[in-house]
Length: 157
Length: 157
DNA sequence: ATCATTGCAAAGTTTTTGCACCTGC
DNA sequence: GCAGGTGCAAAAACTTTGCAATGAT
Image 1 (cartoon, helix red, strand yellow):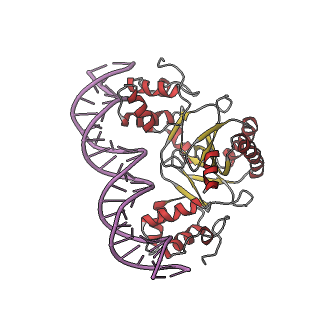
Image 2: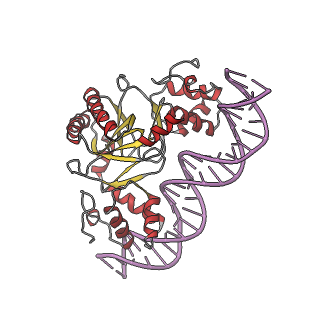
Image 3: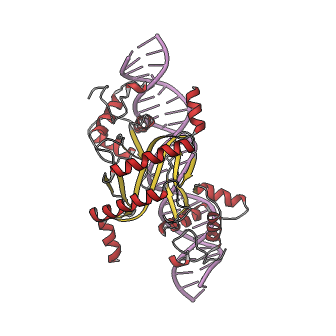
């Protein structure tokens, strides 16, 4: 991967006025190859395991830059740890939302009805940005509930 | 307020098999009277200021019970602190979602297009719960962006 | 050469746990 | 009376900050 490679859909890191360093390359490289919903710890330990030397602080700082530039999305599934995933344009095939199991924390990505959803969201965004003079940059949609396993577990009790 | 009073829409605390104690009354009483998006600290200090004696740990534990029973919604606006608000049935007038300013953290409630939204959500919920055998209990919709003040501040720079 | 970036250690926050005491039912 | 609830203190978990050394352009 070169420094110029697009990470996510909003641009390169260079465009953000950032230097491309070894640690940043490691983080970007890893993130661009995974579809998971990673915590800072996930990223840090994954890289260490691969033998790549990086400090925890640097992971925090690199990820923060990527969020500020719209390259990563930050969200919380309810366990108090920040999670990150590549941001995709709403028109992209990869754009999706999450089903989250309240019980075990499992995350399912879905992109059914994305077209209907996008239409409604556009309508809402238009209206709300006028009404509240609010510049909308991103949206988060989460469904919370129980996955199959946890449902069974609960009914067995 | 009596112990039996409905807090939110899903029932009473007694129905959850919990004892109604003084600290729990304080928390419930406060929450049922406010429409804010409170952190644990907010609740704790607000009660202390009113002269009501309660421990921080108890606030954590009480709020957790209320979340587990669908009486409170828990969410994160991106600052790493859990926030809580009364949960409302999707058919309720008070059901709403949030516009969140990434810059100053301000939250605007909105309930425009709730009817369109509910229709789409029902469709999605139906489909997804079949497809993924997932029991959907709640949903979170957040728009992230810049409020009027922060937009101005940024363009002045 | 310069200024951004790194990574350690230390500190700051938020949340959870252990445990002796207390309280609603 | 007794199971469940409380609150303190301590610990754990997550994140940020200070600073000297390093590295990219």
